Length: 213
Image (cartoon, rainbow, N blue to C red; front, side):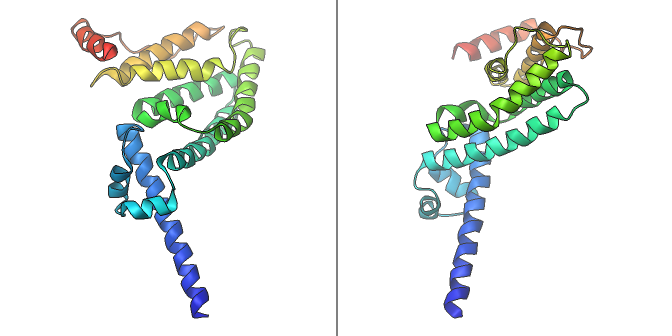
């Protein structure tokens, strides 16, 4: 009985540590990007580096675990967007949410370049069909350009999301502006959402220096 209780306590402790590591890694990667070290993550989790490596054999394994968790989150967001009154509302909601996430979280921009093919296969199987359905329904409503595709969504949102990190301040607002310009360009009907103001002349040099670097 004592051995069973001890084993259960060890499993509970391991699960708790794993959850702490994932939560800390999410926060550290969001702030610093995937260049953050395992030591940074262990410190944020309040655990030793050895404990970190017992739960995840490498940084790549940790990144992949986070990526798979993000797929779950993204699938839930897409389902919520697909439940909107119109597919166009759902598609624009999704793109606004995703660009907002890209602006807040540096890791969103980098995760897909660091994971294995099996994890990417899960992404294609779970996300692509749902996204394609949303795009096709928006087109059938007559609200979206006929030449727009589901593959355009991640390409365009990532490109716009990168703008958010191009300036120490004002980047997220600039990304929002360009997203709204994009949405008006792909819409088959007028979109009433106002566009944020353009980059101020005095900020252009700041943006240019950051973009070049």
